[in-house]
Length: 357
Image 1 (cartoon, rainbow, N blue to C red):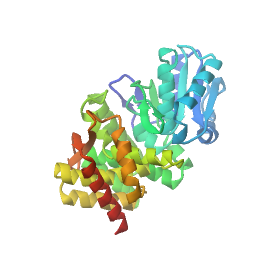
Image 2 (tube, rainbow, N blue to C red):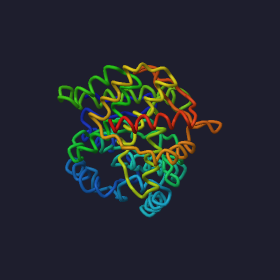
Image 3 (cartoon, rainbow, N blue to C red):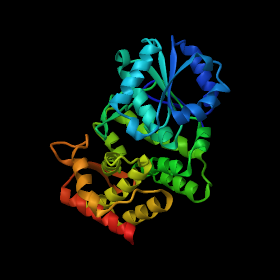
């Protein structure tokens, strides 16, 4: 695995991340350093850094509970308060040690504290390594609507430590693979093939897949930093997927992001056939790989009206029209496809019936 330089001026360290982290911190000479993590990452992942980093004794710790239900303004106020209590100033650094919730919230907290201080991401989940920590999007949920508050603010560096994946449950790994497979579906047949090869027999390793997926995400973001055009392709599966996440949050239940996105990919693949004439052979392939290798959320008819209502509040919509990024074929996305509620309902029903087969 090789380190990756972004056009935004920061490095993604993969080759020897622990040593690189130590060297990088020493070179920056920040006035103060704080680490934001959840109860799991600070207990399980932080000690790994402490074993190696000369700077470990200089960290202040900010701990929150894990889970998407904590990615909100009330918890963020607590993070800001702790940053202030620890005396962080404009020359300070926030280290985000965790999955997508931590990198999203930590990036938002840093980008708004004192009008913006530096932060770095140390992702601890596969999903965060290949997707959430990369691209400069920060965010909080607003009344259970996904990422309705946020900024575009890039980290100063990202340190990817694959050893952290050994601390995860198998379902969390599958959740991350929803984004890996999505990257293949929207951009690269070979990457999709390699991801399936890993899931089937392990012949392709994560040392290959993680840099591949990172490069796909980064290349798209570099072409369109503020999501005006091609970056919207990364939303494939997410209009439906985010609605599923919000549905469960409103019910007081948590669902893994990857499970929601996996189901969203299936529903939006049905839409891709009806709206973009994606070949039925591509649909068949997607409907085979997603349930076989991931853990897609299950739908039922009672959810349809609620899901559509949630999609109507999606931040990607324009002129009250529900917008999607769909596929004309695998690796050929089409952006800004408006769909009627009837078309969306039909795709949801098709997915529900597919699960019953």
